[in-house]
Amino acid sequence: MRNLASDVDVRVGYLEHGPPHVSDVVEAAAVAVPLLLAAGYHVRVDLPAQAPHLAVTPPVGPDPRIARALAQRLHEAGYDGGPVTLAAAGSADQRALDDVAAAATQLADVLGAPVDPAFVSAGAPRLADLRPRAVATYLLAPGLFADKVAACGAPVIAEPLGAHPVLAEIVLDRYRSSLAQPPGRTAPA
Image (cartoon, rainbow, N blue to C red):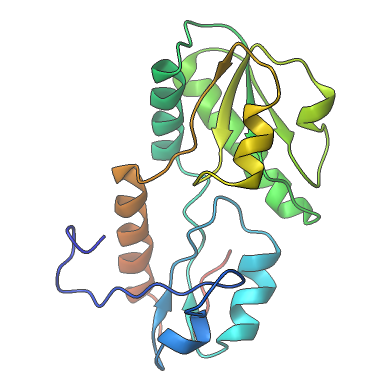
């Protein structure tokens, strides 16, 4: 992100796994771009509660560019066609589950193959209850959920998105879009 926009003051803050916590690094009139793949509880409740004066943009996902990055990760893992399961963390917020379904549709468009979502934690169907052939990991980084995806037994399992350059592009786009909005508002998530 800093390489794409050296004029932007980029700060990192965490909602749960800090420090630094979001509230410790932001200033009045700052813009928060949630580095999350769906607009669930963290985007709608946690972030505004921790820093109520922030302008909060939509999260980075879903986005068609992420679908292309997911396809890249799948091909790197040996995917050569056929149905795919999009494995996501999950949420108790139906809107977040709907975002994952939208991401599955975007990935299906890129791959030209059926893509169905499945969830590691909250949401149905549960990845642990399936026997997928190919899994696109709709997670940002290694960790507990990525370990659960890796343990699902599929012949092809893509790595998490990681530090894929497209994520920084999307963050910058979300930030710039927020600047075009009237001050004192929160972007719809």
